[in-house]
Image 1: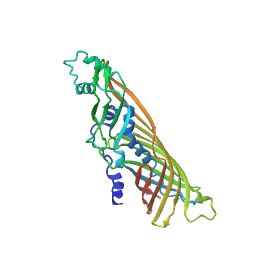
Image 2: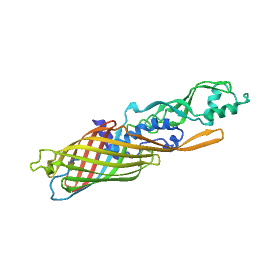
Image 3: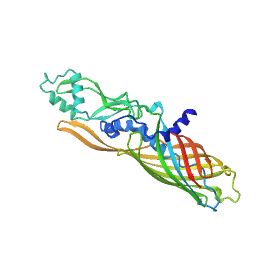
Image 4: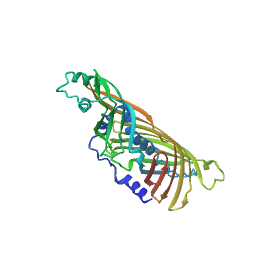
Amino acid sequence: MAKMKTYLWALFLIPSIGIYSQSIEETLSYLSSDAATEYSQPAVTAFGSNMSSGWFTGLPPTSTVGFHARLRFVGVGSLFTDDVRRFSTTGQFQYTSQQANDILIASGLDPSFIPNYDEIRNELLNQVWDVRIEGPTITGSANEFVTVEFPGTTIQGVTINPYVVEMTDVKGFLNNSDMLPTPALQLDLSGFIGTGVSVRYFSGVNISNLGKMNVWGAGFVHNINYWFEDPIPIDIGFGYYFQRFDIGDSFKNTASQLGLYISKSIGTIVSIVPYMGLTYESSKSKLDYDYRFDTPTGPQEINLSIDYEGENLVGLTVGATIIFPVISLNFDYKVAQSQTGTIGIGFGF
């Protein structure tokens, strides 16, 4: 529990946790689409969970008398487990000239003594190879590098042995960080037939050196106790939220959440609102970057755009809001594909 509290406070105190001086765009430029998908997956999953967290802090009142507005700063962070620090996959890959030279020299092919060395290297460069790629993911250690295992082949009657290329430009970008934090500003409005409406926006903050964040979203929650002449002792409702979330030029994400919620307000001047939500969440991400490789005619660069689904499906959130006359504090924890903590502070009436 103490460790969880530390993570939650870090959402406010540590806006950027990356230490990798190379940009994420530069790092991805060395990876084929198969490798980039596996390398980036933990961050994409965390983005999806973060976007679907922190929206709900208690159901709106059922009274039609009065209007309520609250501006909240929300800090959300998904926790990384050890099983997402590394990846291993098979896929296609094209080598650079330097990597091709390393492969050939490792097989004893000295360019000074092999008359057709350039022809052999050019054939190696001209092919798309099926290889094994493994190493740290984006969340892994900055002291480990992604490796590409050349399978070995025969070109122009010359045997080229298997060889493992170590890509020193691709390592764990977040260096074993325990959490990926994201902030947001959210405006909550309520006072209409038991319904609350929320709008979320934030822009310009560099998230863990992955790039500047731009986020916007909106949603609603409805308290079904509004329709009961004799309300039940706890508030029950449903809601829907949607959000768009971009990080730099490489990560573009959307997420939606449909949920069933319960809460109970205890107290008057100072009140405590325990709450719980069971949500179905979906997210989609696009990874966009320029892949660089070499061919016999020279360096090439192609733009790759990879679409894939986040892994979040069902989430269970438990939390509480403490409401003072002007200020409110809330905190919660969500159990899903990614474990996610939220802490928020609000001002309003």
